[in-house]
Amino acid sequence: MELGRGRFLAAAGAALAAGALPRAALAQTVQLPFDNGTRPLVAFPQKRPLILLTPRPPQLETPFEVFNAGVYTPNDAFYVRWHLANIPQSVDASAHRIAVSGAVNTALSLSMDDLAKMPAVEIAAVNQCSGNSRGLFTPRAIGGEWGNGAMGNALWTGVRLRDILDRAGVKAGAKQVQFDGLDTAVLPGTPDFKKSLDVDVARGDDVIVAYAMNGEPLPVLNGYPVRLIVPGWFATYWVKMLSAITVLDKTDDNFWMKTAYRIPDTPGNSVVPGATGYPTIPINRMAVRSFITNIPDGAPFKRGRNELRGIAFDGGSGIKRVELSMDGGTTWREVALERDYGKYSFRRFAGEWVVAPGTYTVAVRATANDGAVQQATPIWNPSGYLRSSIETYKVSVI
Amino acid sequence: MTKQSLTVLACVAALGAAALGANAFAAGKPAPPKGTATISLPGDAGMAYKPGAGVGAVQAACLSCHSSAYVSTQPLLTKAQWTAEVVKMKNAYGAPIADDQVPVIVDYLTTNYGKP
Image (cartoon, rainbow over all chains, first blue to last red; front, top):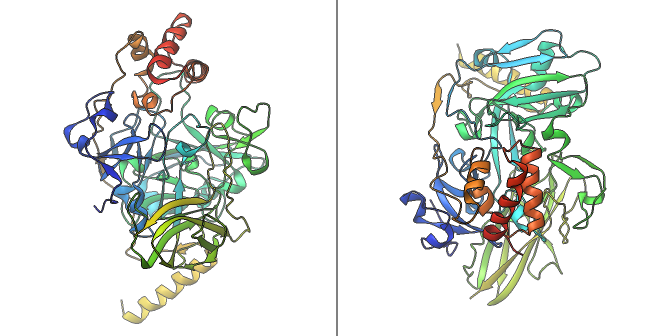
């Protein structure tokens, strides 16, 4: 594994005062760019060493240099995020069923063999945690304190949710479709994790029940044997170990829709810290973002000709333009976009940079096909969702 | 099957893909899995709450559902912020916290993972 120069500190027991990790886990830590952002690198099952946010339920962040290696995020490097601690650690795909019920004409119990007989589709799509980059909020937002690596891009294979719904026959007047997975809460008082989409969203061309990820079965921690894929939408809807699809004749009022994962229904989904009383809506589509992927923290560039590489994505319109600035956002120039893997995928870009020795603030700004463009000023909301402002990087050139 | 008929099939698949938006599959693509996948999670990976007054109440109230890292990775929170978190855990997530234990837990969190 290629590690970014200067990014990893020496074994740092001090950062882990809370207790001793297994010896192997102590080998390296990562310093995310915010207070209390020291994290161990730990290899979980089916995973290479990832940035450990929490071990139970597991939350693992992808080291950022992975995004420089290719347009798709390898399965063993793909980030992990669960809400409830009762996660099946052994899942038999042959015995697994997806129950389809509720406001349908015919209830179904679908096996993997049933899915195999349905038309298969594949789609490249970014899966991003609603709280990706939460640790960068100022003032800080409470929650999972991620850097920028709670995201990944994969080629997903599966069947259209619409085909499943049509087979069951959605009754007139249905409002939403609710999704549940095999994970359950430890305590009876903890709401089971369920998410819902409006029927028209659920019936979209690109919403699939995926049984493969980058051509392989999903890692258990990413939802083996099947998970929902909602391209363009935040990962909270991409229910893992999908076991139940329930058509609702009303808007879902379960905790994870009505109370959690809400964003301000305000311009930019932003509020002033401390504000109260504003309306909220369920989080939905992702905002346009871009990152440079080949600037190792703290490592200088050499004078002369350099290449800056990166990725951009949005909530499903696709990337129209990426611009780089070498002067902190005063002047911009467009860079070349690389191959288009589809409107939901990471779009890679590369730009040449001929530079003299000195210190620079490099910035990257993407514009989506729907016209949305990244802004310099970050938004703020109390849950730390939807961070999407222009990224800047301090770079020294020697 | 002849090479020619394979080509025809591929073209039909490609037409289907165009009509459907996403890419339809040719033969040889991934199929739904059949086997059992088993992993062994590391539990709390050796992490624990810092020792201190009230740690027993915190362990009893919080460890059933999540590791100490849910607390230790937060920024330094104020007493008001920790209070809001504890009340949320009790009311929204059903954490087994008696009313008289709330201030014990809040004091522990503010002392060990917070700021005045």
